[in-house]
Image (cartoon, rainbow, N blue to C red; front, side, top):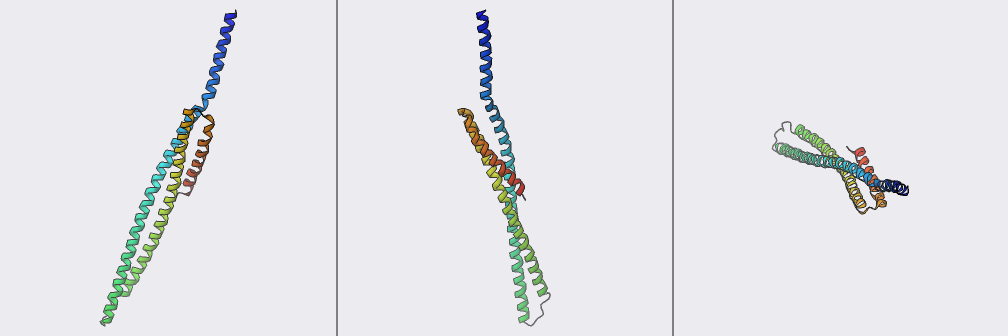
Length: 180
């Protein structure tokens, strides 16, 4: 009876030891799940960051094109004014010269407004790109710290990536809310 009792007690002891071990190591499963979730957030942030970087570059190129157009209209306006002045000095009538000058000035003003708007749009995209990049960095740092915590079996260290992850989520949310 004593052997049977000891066997039964030993069996229960092993079972309890296994349950306690699983409970102690359960945080590792949650850490793996958190790492996977942070990797998803990082991928989303990375895609959005790249999108806004491309949009900023395209808007800046278009703004540059508009500034070139602005300069071209200014040059055409000055050529027309010079032509009018030359014809006037020769005593000849200028054919629609002042209308052309006014048309070029109007077109130049439109180009200036478009260029300014596009440059502002480019800056807005760059601000969003920076926020998305910041979020991605925070998520990646969190995943790395989680890996260190799991490998070193330092459960208390998990507080650091949780905090950094929350900052990353905050930055990600801000970027989505402020996106043009």
